[in-house]
Image: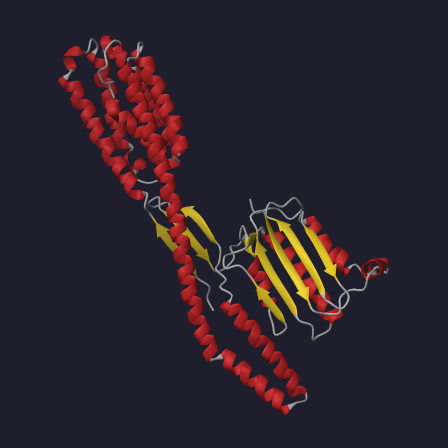
Length: 407
């Protein structure tokens, strides 16, 4: 079977970039018209001509830079803000009375375009950073700022931060929607697979189990194994495992991209879903209970946890016997992942673990507790003779051990 990758492209923010492009064009035209109709007030008109010519050329040349998030780099944002600040600070050189009057600066409202680019690119924090510089430049340019100056500065500052916050909310909504679409698609695919498997593989396994039991002998053992595989396959199909996703930025149009990966990357995934590692253990006498959403850990931590669970199941098979029932429970807490392995076997006699360690048999000490200790977690074993054994494995999501962390 060929594994595929499904991409969900979201671009709610893209219209903002198109609006910013139009805003920069219209406002540079507006700034030029203001200068043309007010040319009599300039003591040094050549300063205004040079400044506005440069801003006009800069605006046209850099239009591709504000077409999407990928093209609008940090270096461009810094250069664009520098042009805006220079235009503000050069205004008194062209108009000596600018510091004593509340007239527009040379770039006028074109300056807000630079701040808006920061807001769309990086959210409200970037917007606050850029608008603070613009506010300082306006106050310096005025020399003796009036109430109207402070009013305009505050208006730009608040508006840019609000737009930046809206952009962040839009991005969060894109991620939520993309994830919902992924879960819906995965559910439909799982239902389709369940139907196909039920009509073929599961029916064959059920038939082998019945015929093997009826024939007896070696065929009965084959039937028992077929029954276990049938239960394991049913559990896997109905478990609802949804692959984790990656969020990235499309270099073509700045869209937020959610990628559902069905095969590992060459360097391995950044996180692993613990459920996918533990679900294959489910069988005729092993019940597996899991959350409905991915339980993510760093790859090495997830593998070590799964190995510890495997060691606990091995102990059940060896010491509790083939007829013992086992339950695996996975819990996803905010700061840690908890996996509990419980059986209904005869339990462990008091002092047996210490005796086993003294004899050099370190299955529990090394395979279970040692692994969890390296992850910065804990392994607690509770056993009452005649009432079974329970092993509780806890792994922090931010690992304090050797296996790395998820963040």
